[in-house]
Length: 205
Image (cartoon, rainbow, N blue to C red; front, side, top):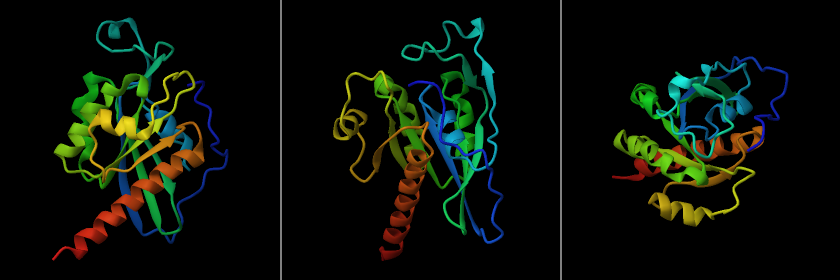
């Protein structure tokens, strides 16, 4: 994928007084998959980032194949906020993707109502741990395939679902993490999924 440019407007929207529902959402996935980019592109406030320049200390520790051009890494988490409407606000937490920071994930999952798993088809195996931890915590999630410009083998969503052994009830969507509307569509898909699950639970005797 090219530079992390986005359609993020220069205007930052204050939280509406009418907002009454806040949902904590975590964005997870492998290193360099686009988590920070997604949070930045959709956030209506200036996002909090904990990115640091990658150094020689990470050589041999961090797996960078497929993302050789990446020069920074998230060392704690990213934070942003987006209002889906006047009454519902999503608080977004982007988890660090490097394996040495995975111990932070379980803490981020505390109080989380749902999650987005970002997938890079060039490094699909990097998604397995995220999916495993979410299933362990029984956290509902959707899978968003971040389509990179240099991904020559464009796998279909059905092929990716099969490769990740995802159940049919887990929603999957294509996205471009650089584009605000694309990222927002991913979040709407997650909220719709949470709503459907809540309705199904209410209907269960």
